[in-house]
Amino acid sequence: VGVGQSQLPILQFSLFELWANRDIDRNLVSFEAYRNLGGIKKIIERHANKVIATELDATELALAQLTLPTLVNMGEQGNDVKLRLPLSHFGTEQKVVLQKLSGENSRLLSIFPVPDANDPTQEVQYVELAHEELIRSWPALRKWLERDSEFHLSLSRLRVSYQKYVKEGGHTDYLIPEGRQLEEAKSMLSDFGPRPLGELRAFIDASVKNVEERTEKDR
Image: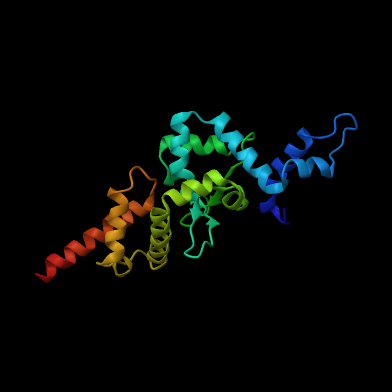
């Protein structure tokens, strides 16, 4: 599964599945058991499907289908990677789902504290996928991503603009300018339903207001 602390979640539930399918008579895990489970990819798929089937009700599952893809940064060439977001980015009901999927029996997500960039004495809770292998090996997550691929690609582009805006101290010159990108961002607010946008919503609103004020000033 690789090396480093980031590999621990996938190693944990892989070992759990192997131990559950051990040779009970000899009390050992055989390579045959690993092969019968289908290797790491199938172990991940089986575990993830079991979690969402047993931990979430129908309403929570619908929320998970909208929420989990936002924890993936989609690349233009299929270079998809996991994304760390503040837990405050999400609404109350979404947080309940995220907490369930990060529990001891789930381990699909990791929730952890990070020092606040504005006040290092305070901590901010962040959430991310437990392992990037989930993006590649869990067909359900891939299906949710691809179903709304236009939205998620737009979201990834918007995050790049927002990060530059924050880096430049929130200067209005780094808001989204009038044109295709702003129209794309506005459609994210109106056309895609209750997707979690967090601070990006305020960024879009500020960009729209900035364009309107400049247009009015030029008249």
